[in-house]
Amino acid sequence: MVEEIARQAAARRAARLASRQRLFGRVRLSAPKLPRWLDAWRELVLPLRLGSLAVVVVLVAALAAFNLPWLKVQRVEVEGSSVLARSQLLAAAGARVGESTIMLNTERMTVNLLAQPWVAAASVKVRWPGTLVMSVTPLPPVLILQRGGRRELLAVSGAVLGPVPQTPTLSPVPTLVDQIQGAGAGPGRVALPANLTAALAALSHAFPAAYGVSVVQFLISPVGSLEIKSSAGWVADLGPALTNAQIGSIGAKLEALRALAAKVNLKSTTIKTIYLEDPSQVVLSP
Image 1 (cartoon, rainbow, N blue to C red):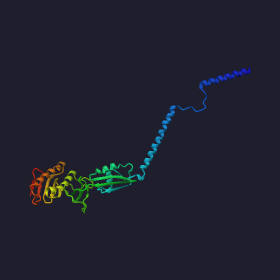
Image 2 (tube, rainbow, N blue to C red; image 1 turned 180 degrees about the horizontal axis):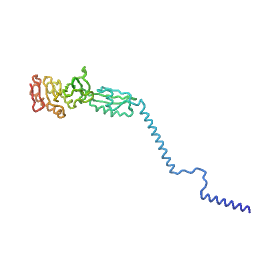
Image 3 (tube, helix red, strand yellow; image 1 turned 30 degrees about the vertical axis):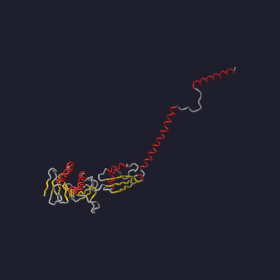
Image 4 (cartoon, helix red, strand yellow; image 1 turned 135 degrees about the vertical axis):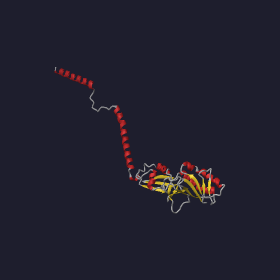
C-alpha cells in the first residue's frame, strides 16, 4: 500500500515536470544567441569608429604641422631688381610673414607680381624650410618724367621705376616735362597713360629718320597741349593730349609733319613753331 502511494506520487511529479518543460522549454545553461541584425550593426559601426579615429589623428597631425615654426614663412628674399621695398613687394604678391609654407600658392603669387605695371618677369618659390624667394625683373625705362623738381624713370606702361640716378648708367631716354601735375607718383605707380608713354617712346626713336632732327624734350603745357622740342630749335605744338581720343590723334598729326618735311627743310633754324593741332591746316611760325 505504501509502495503504491509512493509510485503514484512519483508519477504525478514526473507529469508536472513534463508539463513545465512543454510550457517553458528546457532550461538553458548558456547565454542566449544574439539576433542577426545586431551582429550586422556591429560589423557596420566598428569600421566607422576606426575611420573616424583615423580622421581625427590626421587632422591633429596636420594642425600640428601647420603650426611648426620651420613650416612657416620666416624669411623673404628678393632676387633681381625691385622698384618696391621688400614689404611692399610681399604685399603685392599676396603673402605675409608667418604664413604656412604648405598652404602657399606660389603660382597665384607669380600672377599677382606679373600684374604689376612695372614688372617684366617674375617668379615665386619656397626654399624649405621657411624662406620665400621672389624674383622680379622690371621693365626697361623709356622716358624720364619731370614734374616740378622731381625726375623719375618711366616704363612703357607709364609706371614709375624710380628716380633718375645722378650717375647715368643706361642709354639716354627722352624727357617729358609735365607742367600740369607737380607731384610725382611714386615707385611702382602709373604716372602717365600707357598709350601716351608708348607713343612718345616710339616717336623719339623714329624722329631722326623721319624728320631729320632728333627730339630734345617733350612738354605738356599748363593747358594740356603736347609740344615737341627738336634739336633744330623749333617746337611742334600737337594740341591737347589728355584724353584717349586726343592721344590717338597724334599719329595723324605726325603724318602731317612728315608731309611738311617733304616741302620744308626741318633742319632750318629759322622755324620757331609748327602748329599741328589741326593736321589739315599746318601753320609755321618763323
